[in-house]
Amino acid sequence: MTRKAVLFTGQGAQSVGMGRDFVEASPRAAEVFRRAGEILGWDVAGVCFQGPAERLEQTDIQQPAIFTTSAAIWEAVRGDRRLDPGVVAMAGLSLGEYTALYAAGSLSFQDALRLVQRRGQLMQAAAEANPGGMVSVMGLDVEQVETVCRQASERGPIQPANFNCPGQVVVSGARAACEAITALVEAAGGRAVPLKVAGAFHSPLMAPAAEGLARMLESVPLEPPAVPVIANVNCQPHRDPDTIRRWLAEQLTSPVRWQASMERLLAEGVHEFIEIGPGRILSGLMKKIDRKVPVVSIGAAETLARPIGLTA
Image (tube, rainbow, N blue to C red; front, side, top):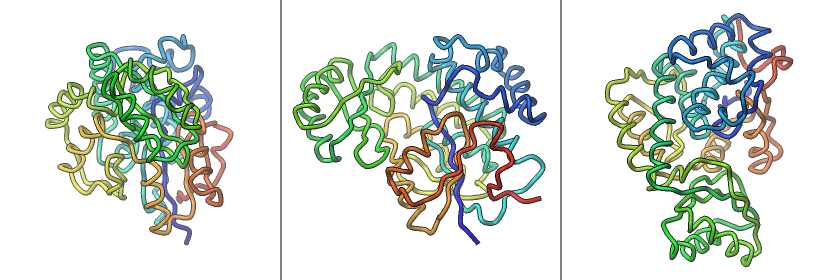
């Protein structure tokens, strides 16, 4: 039996029109969007399907929109079927960790949606209070990235924020430091691309957001996941409500260790990955982590007919 892991996409994968084809193909997906609008009090489907792109890119809108789209795709794929024993783990990139916990039964849809909406609001507020940004650094190893961060820190705090795959590390920090690091990366032989994000996510500048999220998590009902869900902050599987609450709050100020998380799953014998959500970002990262491992990307309704490790 092939051991499989289900992966859920994170922030930055949004595009106008996402999820519409699943709603047209699946009543279960349509119900997810209907419930999301009812719970949040705004037209989630309308923003996802029609935009405008500027609104969909707002952190406090983007996070619940991507979560809803990924949850809708998951429900369309899952249908009335149960997980095959071959699915041995789940993981999600940053925001996607919430979708993974929802899919694994740790969070109800309503609680997960409200959490990600509040998470986005808190991150947006922290970004406005402490202006910062993020820069994707390509072509340098981890030690080189840490070196240029130390050099740029003369202009303000900055640190690695996403260890995505070999040769790609995203750094996060104060705006002046992000501006300074571009020349430092190029001088070291790499390439730096500033990201269109609201602030310095996964860095200490998000501390106020982490504190607010921790307070909200205290009152959210949680269950142990039905299958292991790998935490971004330490590549360890969530075991119980205490680890879920603690590690989700820590995630806002700590680096996302995606490459190491995937390498852990590979070392544990996972031989196939299933990407759920808009876009193909995670499939692209996996090709750079281990090109030989197959990844089935479920981001369009035409892929619903693919066998992905679910059974009647």
